[in-house]
Amino acid sequence: MATNKELADLIFPDIKETVKDLEKRFPPRKLKPGAEVTRFAPSPTGFLHTGSLFTALIAYKFARQTDGIYFFRLEDTDQKREIKGTGLDLVNQLANFDIISSEGYFGDYEKGEYGPYTQSKRADIYKIVIKELIKKGRAYPCFCTKEDLEQLRLVQEANKVIPGYYGEYAKCRHYSVDEAIELIKSGKPYVIRFKSKGNHLNHIRVHDEIRGDMDLSQNDQDIVILKSDGLPTYHFAHLVDDHFMGTTLVTRGEEWISSLPIHIELFESMGFKPPKYAHLPVIMVNDKETGNKRKLSKRKDKEAAVSFFLEEGYPKLGIIEYLYTIANSNFEAWLMENPNTSLDEFKLDFNKFSLDGALFDLPKLAFISKEVLSHLNKDEFTAQCLAWAKQYSPETTKFIENDIDRFKKIINIEREQEKPRKDYEKFSDVLPKIRFFDKDAYDQALNQPLPYNEFISKEVIKALLIEYRDHLNLDCDEQTWFNDMKALGKKHGFADDRKVYKKDPQSYNGWYADCIAIIRVTICASTNAPKLYDVLQILGKEEIIRRVNLALSKIQ
RNA sequence: GGCCCUAUCGACAAGCGGCUUAAGUCUCAGCCCUCUCAAGGCUGCAUUCACGGGUUCGAAUCCCGUUAGGGUCACCA
Image 1 (cartoon, chains in turn orange, brown):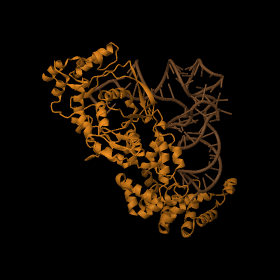
Image 2 (tube, rainbow, N blue to C red):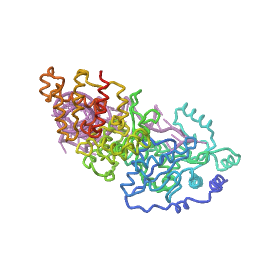
Image 3 (cartoon, rainbow, N blue to C red):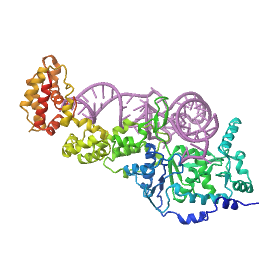
Image 4 (cartoon, helix red, strand yellow):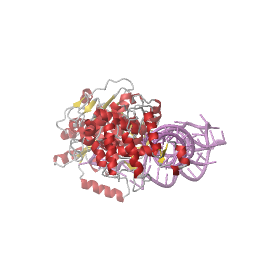
């Protein structure tokens, strides 16, 4: 009768190291009490998902606020789904939000004592542990084919029993060691399965940092831990990696709750101490068709891809603040009390997490973003806007670089004051609102009739514009300018007092607001614009006169 | 379908047995202010906490059931 050891040696003849060796290779980390080791462990299957950003942010934050370590691990064990190059993209996109790991995978290189941090490079490490598990009789080769498994499922469905590979249904766990060796020698392909000792009728109590204690059924599934391609499945990689990398706190989406019993049994089987778990609520969206909540989907929802926000030019800080708003209910109050404080000062608290998934609320993000952008000074705003433009908007870049000081003046209208203007929620809003400052853009706009108030006759408009042009004076303060405008209006039949006008509108062409509107439309080719006085100061006398003349020529 | 998680305004949510005839923020509506717009100020928007039972002198808060939503049942993570 052959032993488990012989089986293990047959399967992994080249594996000489033991788990003890691994423990020496990856000694416990020397950390301050309370310091958490967290990680972000995505698979390289595409660009950064908004939910992943959220998860990464939480992991990063907890490490940071406990003086711990946050690292990045690439889970590339599924070669079929892998999209080359996306691992690096993920790192870069995160770095964009200042979520930078102190160790781990960085794309073209790795840093840290607990690597490799790329799972495909850790095959030997997994095999060492599996070899041990086989020796202990806690893992075995399974020769079932896809068809066998399909057949099993059908039988189980027909008999209305729980589907899966477990207990009496786990055919290969019942082979003797000799039989297994025989089968291997005959060249039959196989995977390695974990041999569960659990019974799903038994309950285990598992603690979750966010949800508290949960009662879950014990695992009884003989899950596969090593695939036929020689790479581990997620569950097993989680055991090995998070143990040897010294992870103390696993933050992941709540979809993992149901596999928690597997992970608990895996850790038990090796005598490893499991990490703390925090299962995060998932960001949801309301499905327009069904009216139900569902996970943000990259295919259906533009806001599922972080790249969307970056392309649109949402300020990064706005996105982070919004994510914190979802994460901790007290964050908004904290922000209001500490308006000029670094987000570093805010302490995330698992007790303040909501238990169900929040709907992604674009209007709220818009509000926060406006807030963030409006409080930037002109230099900060310009720097960020230009950085965005260089990547996503050649037109905006051209506008800014054409005359950067002028650009600063433009976006500084009603900025840098107690209650700043809030008209941009993202950088892509900038150019459409200020394009009219550009000569060519203005001339282009004249292809359309200017949107004057149709209740005011052309003659009045013409006369007003002519006098305005001939007596143009910009060398004065705003109040003087404003009074001049009122006086000009009065000469042309516009009331200089609102109440007076309201009492007897028939006697006037309008009131001074209507008069100013004529100038605004003439100069800006639009019925709305930032403060006219500031616009005029930036444009300068010559350009104003040019525009008035052009407009005049267009009025029949 | 089994199992698990969750359930307070349109959204995010406070609330942890009496202080709640339910905070705050966003949205929305109205008013005011303003040269337009963006803002800003003020006001309004849950007699009720999915529903039904219990426990209690007393429940949004504890228990049970129902319903609804979400998750999960892979050689994917």
